[in-house]
Image 1 (cartoon, rainbow, N blue to C red):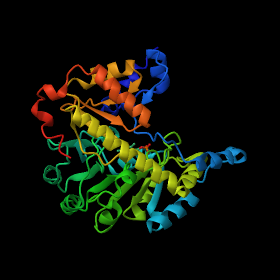
Image 2 (image 1 turned 120 degrees about the horizontal axis):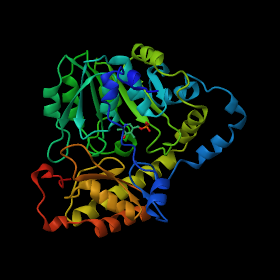
Image 3 (image 1 turned 60 degrees about the vertical axis):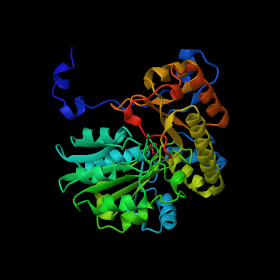
Image 4 (image 1 turned 90 degrees about the horizontal axis):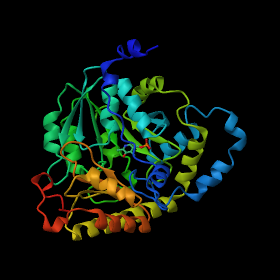
Amino acid sequence: MSTAPLLERVRPAVRDLPAYNAGLSAEYVRRTYGVAHVAKLGSNENPLGASPAVATALGQIGAELAQYPDPACGALSERLAAELGIHPARLIFGNGSEDLIAIAAHTFLAPGDEVVTITPAFGLHTIYPAAAGARVVTVPLRPDFTIDVERLIAAVSPDTRMLILSNPSNPVGSALCRQDMQRLLAALSPATLVLWDEAYYEYAATDADYPDGLQLLGATSLPWLLLRTFSKAYGLAGLRIGYGVAADSAMLELMHRMRTPFNVNRLAQSAALAALDDRAHLRASVRHATDERERIGEALRERGYRVAPSHANFVFFDTGEHALSLARRLLERGVIVKPWLEPGYQRCMRVSVGSRADNDLFLAALHACASIRPAQHPIDRSCESLSKP
Ligand SMILES: *Cc1c(COP(=O)(O)O)cnc(C)c1O
């Protein structure tokens, strides 16, 4: 018996799809490397965890577990709509915001369509469009790791069906300023969907010049979808819930037909409501991430590393050597980071902000494992001005 006759007939878009690099679990690293403690700094999770109010809310759900969740996320929708000052019909929820990236790709893209994004980028920004058969055009960052708005403007045309960007960017953490975002939006055609991913919005919201995506997109007549998530600053990555705000409800009517009807489970809906209530926990999470991000960045710069400016809960830097082999050596010391694999960026790694102790463990392990001392070794030109703040 063979499945080959079936597999040979699978669409090339599926057969050629790269696997998502989901990172390693703490369990796996503990078992494989025999380390007692693992610093999990590869997935941008919140080291403070979720608000204690979430555990309380989840504890009250027991009896309702046998019933399907609300397919419209009604209570959460009302609550967020009031907070954002929009009509609830312009909100859509997903099993993580990545679910919404997939739904948008399958709703709005056809085989052969052109999608424009940046590189390095969040893997799913290219994988889901590619799964829908789209052709993804990627625009590299400037040498100082800021987003190259001129090249993005040059890359888009009325033939571009989707522009997909995260601001702040993942994996780098740099962000388009208000003026550059406005210039970019002004260059787009009304036939281009703007998929604006604000997974790290909460960390950047109070930074000078960080644009209010909702306001700037809302001021255009473009079709747009703004994405946010409860996985990062709210600490709910394990429950899977994110949301999108759309230019209008007509766009969402199509997306609702394409999603699975119960894509957000009962626990996630209830947890998100509880998390929204605890503003103090959110503030503490953001403060911890931004303080520690600056401390890690400073420590790396002092050692001579070129560090990208970050508005998020992670730091991206040029290790000066092959980042994947360095990351393997860090694993032996129980430290998980994300070495970047995209061509042109393979000396770079992204380290998430963890607890203070885990961040110190990372800095000590890096010092012990690095095979070069960056201050003494010239680094090639590809990351030339990365250390500029
Ligand atoms: C983490 C992340 C997401 C989404 O995460 P979910 O857990 O699916 O909500 C989306 N976009 C970017 C850029 C991210 O880094």
